[in-house]
Image 1 (cartoon, rainbow, N blue to C red):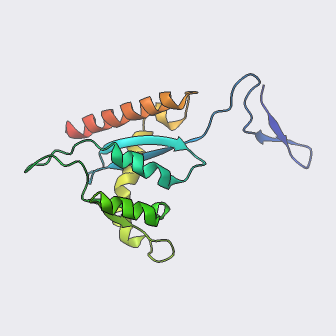
Image 2 (image 1 turned 90 degrees about the horizontal axis):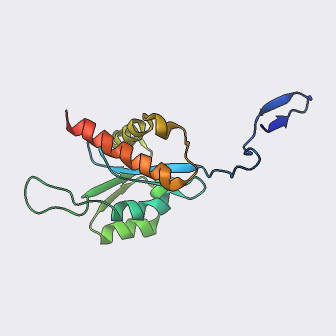
Image 3 (image 1 turned 90 degrees about the vertical axis):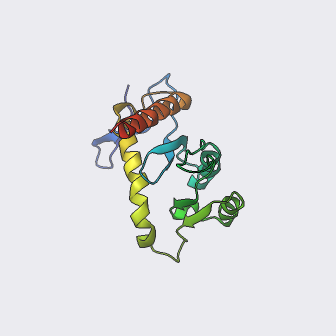
Length: 165
């Protein structure tokens, strides 16, 4: 059974967000990702759409795998982290500096997005690669853990395809 909104003129409108009777309401999810300079997804995560983006940064940075370098020992952290204005929180900047990561975060109300725009397209392309998989375009799963599993699988397949070239 579908729920329809009533237009003031008496005509039926579009569908509402209400689920069918007996079905639980799904929470809307947001995809978070950290990628390298080439756009390969290093870590992915999800959060509810009504939470602030900055809450997802610490778990993503902590989940980074060891980065293999051509020379020297493996690194556990990136040198720089580029982010948009949603992550402009002094506590996050301090946390990144304590970990030895240089934050390149656009400041709210001070910087325009032009300076970071040349780096931001990389993560936008990564998200486009991930949402190119049909299973990740529309959320079919009821449980967020299942969606996260498919997102992780999509990231692994993306890495395989790009590294196999």
